[in-house]
Picture 1 (cartoon, rainbow, N blue to C red):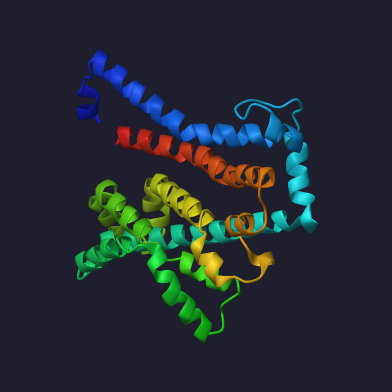
Picture 2: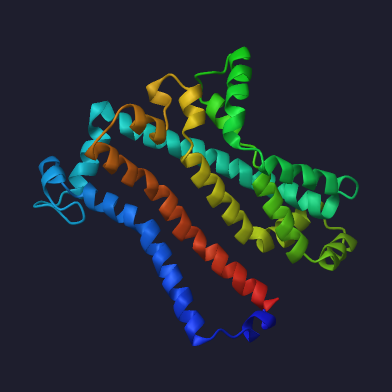
Length: 278
């Protein structure tokens, strides 16, 4: 951290960096702004008013209420399904990545490098290339059309395992672990009391990546599911809704990811402060 603090940036470079970052914020934030504005309009204003500004009436809460209650509440079911698929899989990924990353970094001596290289290789494989083989596999074991055909393929996360291992390698001191072992502390106790508080910022990052990735999944549930009641929001909106209803549905669907990002920022801030103090 002292080396980072000693790096100086000229005023001119700071201006260019600020312009670059603001341009990126505007580029990625403009679609969100347009969707948020569209959520406030009624059907008549959606086609006649300025697309970049509010309509004659503003009814965001009423529009969201109509979205959740219309069509026998099917969108509410999709929304719950998305939270279930992405939340459950992200939680399992965090747990497996935490234990697996720590084990690969500090407990496994032989074969750890091979496992790490294999993990990196698995990251390079596009997930969509595995959907058709998984469809054939689940068809043979009669799981197609169930929640397991969507949930189980979401659970493996080589990226989460790699990130936690990398973080443990560089932030967990072997001397502290050996001192705890000399005091006859169990490995589970060491992990819970020493390792877990240190890697918490990275676990928050792994959870967010897994949650957002699985929340945006479309191809896998589209292929696996045939019951509309089991659809996530991505598949449901693509097959059923259109027009303003789709925009309102998209706006509501991205809110869990946005809220998770702002909530997990606290872990990153505390992690940086802890790292600076060490």
